[in-house]
Length: 394
Image 1 (cartoon, rainbow, N blue to C red):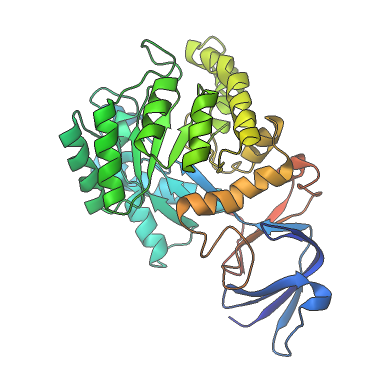
Image 2 (cartoon, helix red, strand yellow; image 1 turned 180 degrees about the horizontal axis):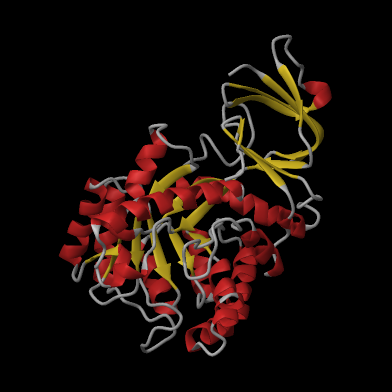
């Protein structure tokens, strides 16, 4: 791939906005970015003008590439499993079409996302960068058991974490609480003991893996943060004392506002009387207020959609940015979370998250307006580039 000299009206490099910019790339890597007057065009570079506003590609820290209702019963034939792998790859590319150049899969049927990751890494099939846990970890009869390895004591937790790492997990995902609709002593009841939290986190960190926890309820979030997890996924019933501790520890929140939004918007449209979808509607305002307060306090924030959850689409992952702004973040804060913050949490800051020398030339041209001024612009047209190559419609 030859050198390419891109120019355009506006670029957000992950740190600052540059008007009338130039970006020089070679072999899918950025060589230089800055005002056009300061970045020269080599004689051997091809010139290309980029339309719209350019930002780094999005990184989605919470997706589920391979889901199936049949997983609840375990009744999945080999034929169906092979079909699901193809569906999962299709889903990964739907994310890419939405501007997501890297994603973190936090639990898939039979751990199928491990193979999808490997195939993409080997260049056998196209797709975004994928990190995955393969199987998450839950208790017997716990939340998310269909995409998890069941562990019921500190010793089982240690072995479970080591098992999924042996099988290829990039990250460890613990199902720490029930869902917002789960029965129990509090909304999102805690499903892990303090000893199980401690064992899981210790085992994961000892082998260089970060720990994400599915946690809605206050007790689960509290136990997880004090045990040293790296990110809290969802976090609906988080209180301010926990936020303060997350600031102190550098623990991320990945709010996944899309999950309850689509459960309500699409779920109630399809099934207006469904009590689960009605309960999801009751937590939306609390969820948004939690994120706003986290932002005000300085809790690290990353971007995640929970795509693959019921009614939660892959090809509209960018809409999470709109929901984050509606919750109280500025467009710049939302984009920073979706690029710089997510890259840090995923351990990909060396290659993604910003557009600067040495990093991947993976970016999005937002074609209909300026999303840094009007976040609704993300709903318009876009052109995605992955490692310097334009992504064709999928």
